[in-house]
Image (cartoon, rainbow, N blue to C red; front, side, top):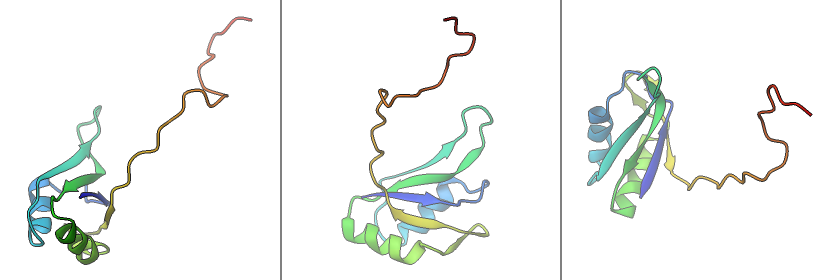
Length: 98
């Protein structure tokens, strides 16, 4: 089960996230998303737990709980919606000549 964790303290490390979730079962992986320009946490991440029941238990227990001084949001990760590049509109156009 892939779990989305939001509103993380910017100083939270993957090891403390792993520790919090491992109380509920096996944790396969932990990934805090980092800003590629600043190298700082973006304040959210993902935890992968192979057992669905353990993952659901972690979600129920950790959602709206405190971690590193912040109230975190924990929920089942949903697949990203596919972005259609043919939506119309679009950006760009800077310095475009007609």
